[in-house]
Image 1 (cartoon, rainbow, N blue to C red):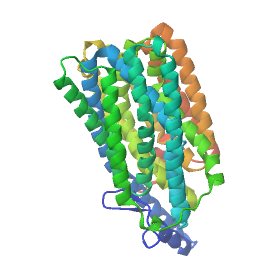
Image 2 (image 1 turned 120 degrees about the vertical axis):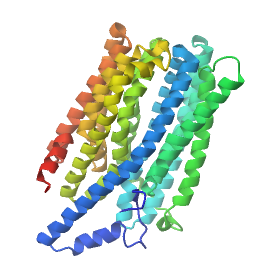
Image 3 (image 1 turned 60 degrees about the vertical axis):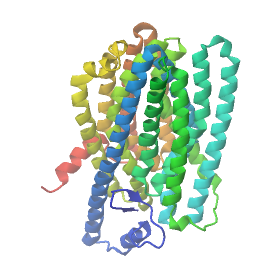
Image 4 (image 1 turned 90 degrees about the vertical axis):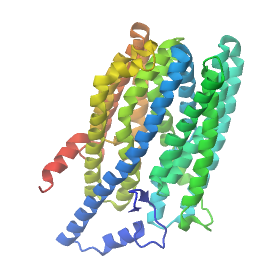
Length: 482
């Protein structure tokens, strides 16, 4: 794996002497004395610098995408009001959960298997798992959409027409969302870290914002949830097309003309926990909206969604770091370089907390005025956002622990911890919403976030022998010269 001029991690073809194969040759040729240790230390430092550079570019893409997403949500919320926005948020929550489940875990598995195959020049298997991922995830998404549509139509007499229409459109978007999620993973293993972010983070939300603005300008009535969901469907079609174009341009030379080889017996055991994690991960971020909407509190669901979206800005640095962290961990784990892995994890944790803290400070001071921009209906969401910010800062301090577990073969444990946390979150929301409304959902979400990250930190320390989170970052800083 190498770093190009944009700081992106690139899986090199067999003809490239600077790729993972060349690095592996250098490692084998290194002496086993102090010079070898010096070489390992130098490689660790380079990996840390590459992580920082790549995360910076990924962070810029995420910041741009977050700004567009935030503006799009601002426009939609202001134009639609709390109730219609609640319907829209409820539908998007269901579409996201179903789409992530339909990826069957391939959006993560590709980041683990393809770099490992590249290290060993197993290009037929690399091509095989990419084609296998696209075929099976699309089939799962289409089946999910059809079953979901049948359920919605059977229940249509008990649902508001706007909710029924929006749900059907949202289900139609599930295969499209699934495809650009899996396609984005393909772009990342091809080296297009920033290119993988642009379609979903920039293009999709830019088109969504444009369509909503056009609807508002060309109609006398404000847009409802049905129109907003239709705009999401159209923008998702364009996103899938762009991902396909970029993938064709970045397709690795080592994969061209290679007959695909398939090893489903090796892939499926890892895919099951990854599939669960993909669905449960997004479920944990949507539980509050889904349960508020499920219990008929549509207006409160819209208010909670706005407060949650504001707090989720703090996730951006952590996800940006994970974008570069995941393939790097896969590479280091394949080499058995635990010292370098500890160093990179320390750097990732420090970068994650620093980025989140820089975003949290202005948010805490500007939360009230910020939410009033959405409309007076949403002003009460400031308390929700304050509570959720606490959980996000704590998660940032622990570092990208889920990526670490997944990329080191501990995906089953990661899935078990996530499922337990998701169950805790659902239980907390079920108990908290009837008494405290959306505030209860926020309290349950934050408590779950803290408990989940503490559990992962304990597991990482016991089973991987790594010092987790910010403790790791501070420890490495003390040992470094100067």
